Amino acid sequence: MQFKKLEFSNAAGQRLSARIDLPASRDPVACALFAHCFTCSKNIKAISNISRSLTRQEIAVLRFDFTGLGESEGDFANTNFSSNVDDLVRAAEFMADQYRAPKILIGHSLGGAAVLQAAGQIPSAVAVITIAAPADPRHVSRALGDSKDIIEQRGEATVDLSGRPFKIKKQFLDDLASVRMQETIRNLKSALLILHSPIDDVVGIENAAKIFQTARHPKSFISLDNADHLLMDKRDSVYAGSIIATWAMRYLGTDVIR
Image (tube, rainbow, N blue to C red; front, side, top):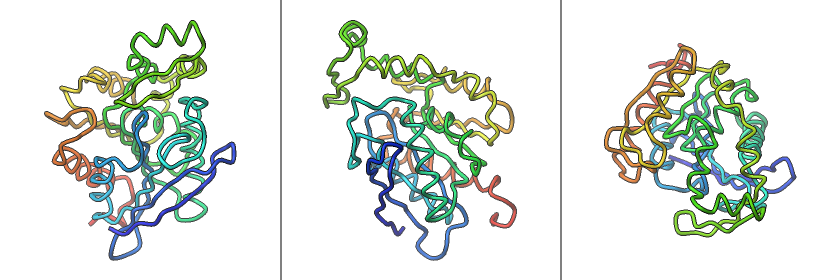
């Protein structure tokens, strides 16, 4: 797998850090865009393993850090679910200008909800994949625990998430409440693949069931048996990557199916 470090700008003109993973031997047959999980970054191991599985099938993958996270500019406290969706749309526009428009959108956890929401604004997308995604982005507010009430009362609070402090403002909660996710899923025009673990204790399996029941065909569900939410076991992310690569080929056109 080859890769290149890239940068593009968000809607506010701030620099977002990205990389594109490329097949080693030839030009890609298609490009995918990957959205990472809440407060994560483009460099978590699970994303690398999934990306490697796709490049082996000659699919290039662009992954980036959302505004205010990883190596990207911006203040995380001023971001929200809608700004994540905007970042995805900007990333797709950048890909269309510099490489190829993404035909595949992949999102992990809240990133899965974000790609569902962004798909309608990315006309090139023919396949959408969610991994451990919530059926409603408001689910992420559960991770805030008792801090949610403090945020509602005081307007902001510093919250410990995965051992790191993050300032969360009330505008983040208000934005989550404004999203009409069920309508978005029902109107999705791309093929949909849902991957979820039945023992996920962060985003329960009932979320996958709700997404599947709401979406129209073509849609598929794959169980990530025994996997944790972040796919920390390499075998789980490698398996997920191989499934995604094989499934997506069906929607890329008969000229690339081998």
